[in-house]
Amino acid sequence: MEDLVTCTEKVAQLTKLLSAAMDEIARLKRRLEKYEHPKTSRNSSVPPSKDENRPSRNKSLRTGSGKKVGGQPGHKGHTLEFSAHPTKIIPLMADFCTHCGGDLHAIEPSKMESRQVFDISPIVPIVTEYQSFSKVCNCGHCNKASFPV
Image (tube, rainbow, N blue to C red):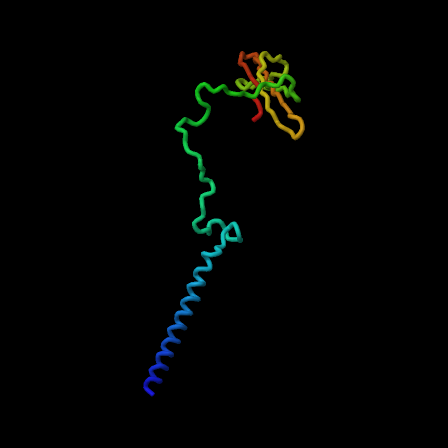
């Protein structure tokens, strides 16, 4: 009879241990789920700031050459050439003297300086040439029309 009681107690103890172990296993499985299929900003609506161990996307794999940034000595540069036939020519004239405030409408311009702006349209580039003329006021001050920004 004692053997039966001892066996029953052992079975009860083992059942209790098994139940505790099963609870622990279930708790650990729940903890592991977030690592097996983690929600990130790429596969859910989680913001990127909440991504764990997120890799730096802008990390370049290139290594430095030791040279300075920009064109190297001896490199022939390329400059956008002036267009011989601009699409539009907009003359810019100074209307008043920036020195004394005198009227410059009646005075003929003496010098001209040009700048071109290349605006690329889907089909044909629109080349606008701005021509800034200089006028000398009666007071002797040379006035040059300013280019648009």
